[in-house]
Length: 321
Image 1 (tube, one colour):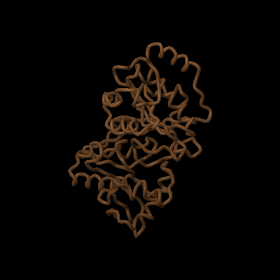
Image 2 (cartoon, rainbow, N blue to C red):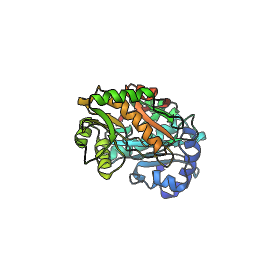
Image 3 (cartoon, rainbow, N blue to C red):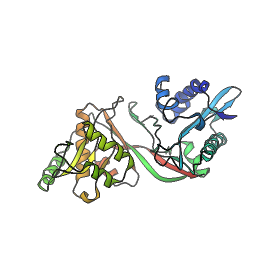
Image 4 (tube, helix red, strand yellow):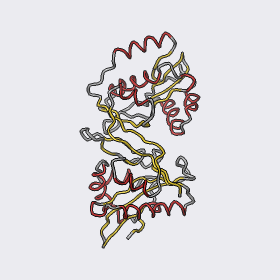
């Protein structure tokens, strides 16, 4: 039986999260963390959460979210997770739970169901081949999970693929060639510094040129608040950014992204920004870095050259309802 979530389901959902969810790669959680991440998250709603129950036992659940305050939330509903116990993990039960969520999105006037990084319900997972290191969200459905192919068979399509990449910072040292490159770039007026609003200009304009809604919200605010934000500069004009720099509680060095405004591309700022980020994150106490990049994104080669490796691949999923 598929039915709507009630608060009485929370304990059983947590149990599934720590068993079947952990088998899918999600990071195990205590009740307090589970509530913060999901059941008491500001964007959690029983209207978009359904459970599979048989003879009083909860065997699976699905959660999604939508709303005007979410990017593209006027037309999209977002799937957060779908977890089934080992005994109930079937194509049929996956279809039943997905159908319940999709119908709820249709009733709310949404025209798409998506699995992307725009979902504000961010669920952490364990990076394979690491000592329990976590990444703080997923940008899609892992291609190694049965759920990925099941969704494709149910009318979803992959709009793109994202690679999860990882590097321990324990042995990180900036290569000599990076310093040589920095010296050559300085002669052309390009360099990387911590953002200083009293000396640097054009931060908001630079971020606007990158046309990324999440960066436009986060990066200027980080600069104004005095966070350790690294900027690529042409003279004193902001040409690119990375950061803000700080270690998360897990030991991961935070990474909002890296961008260089189109008119300043081609001078090596992206590479220099990234290596300076690794330096600063290690100095700040971060133990490792993890990030996502598009499978076809040229920046992937910057990360590989810096010692990162691909640990998992995710499909960004979309279905018209």
